[in-house]
Length: 200
Image: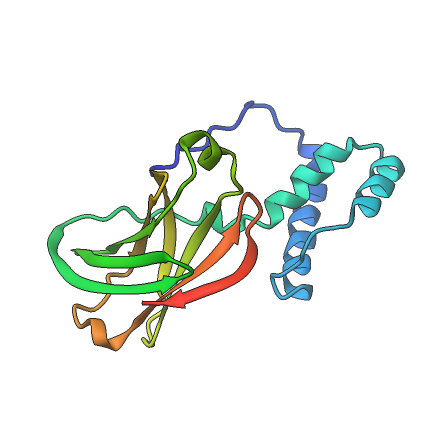
């Protein structure tokens, strides 16, 4: 999924606030360091108190702090280039009658593409499936000294079948015995972990 290039909403900038804007950046950096980049979210009461004290709308403050949870969304995007081959994986994990599988990894010169398939026996109709609380998965790679950036490219599906696509960079080794794919489940939209994870 290609991110649209950012275009500033105006060409105007008041140079009198440049020092304040830099201080804001410095405070955000300190916030990341003090929280070990795991800040959580201010309580509803804190948001209410600050909105009154500093004359902001509560929803505006909620939006500001929500963005602090999603910095990784703005990493530079690696687009796979130079297709090489498909590597058969044929690995799976089953839990509560839900079958999770990765059948292959698509290799490119600069990245790998991993598809996670989720199949279940569902008695729900399509309207019930759309109304249920949906979750998504994030991928990490274990067993290699190399640090891999794993980006969820989104997914889709319907009753009984879903697929998520991940772009991993740099490219994974061809020898699949040298690493493991770790999938962790999160609630949408604010990345709340459910505690469920599995290895393929």
